Amino acid sequence: DYEAALRALSSAEQALRKEQRAVARPLLAQAHSLAAKAQERLRRFPEALEEARRALELDPSQSTARLARAMAMQQTGLAKDAEVELRDLHRRNPQDSEVCVLLGYLQLCLGNSSATTTLQDAVAQTSSRALRKSLAGMAKIYLALALDSQELGDSQVRAEQLVREGLGLHRNLQHVWRAQEKLLPQQQPPYTAAVQQL
Picture 1: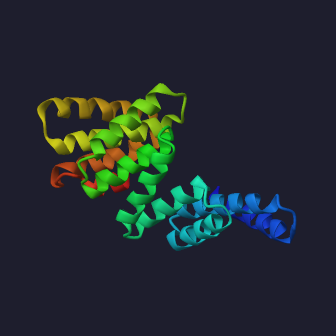
Picture 2: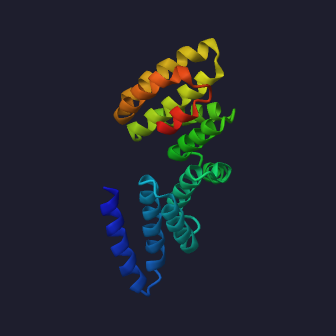
Picture 3: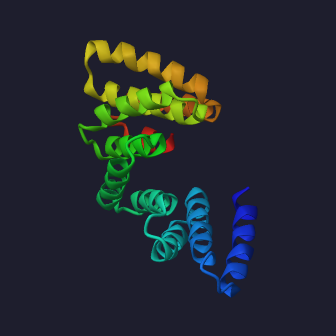
């Protein structure tokens, strides 16, 4: 429950602000980072951006805040800035599967031809590690959409296989996919509306 998390983080923030020891600063930055992530998940993008700003003022290395900021920027029409942020996060930590998946997602939304390569890396990363199944499912579905937009014979078969595998890993997307699947024949690649729903 993101609302409950925000209430707890607010209480922690108030307590940390009263604390004068050096240990309070990184904890306060972490609290703001987590609040930024929760606000982004609740689709409160201005609040997410503000929490991320506060976290990064205290500790510029807070990757959680940078990731929440990138996703909020993407949702508020600052997709190019979000891509720069995600590329930098990916460059600093190429093994961060979540960043790789989200960078590929953003590239797919932008119609960027590098989306396929990024998402292939994301699928390889999420398949080779014991990570959240839902992240692996998202990577496979986004790669399927990227391959489908290429409209090559072999990639169509691979795209269908990836969708089935991805949906098997991410049950919440199964419901959304069923609704989008009916609309896909009416859309043109890169299927931005479908990708954003997923």
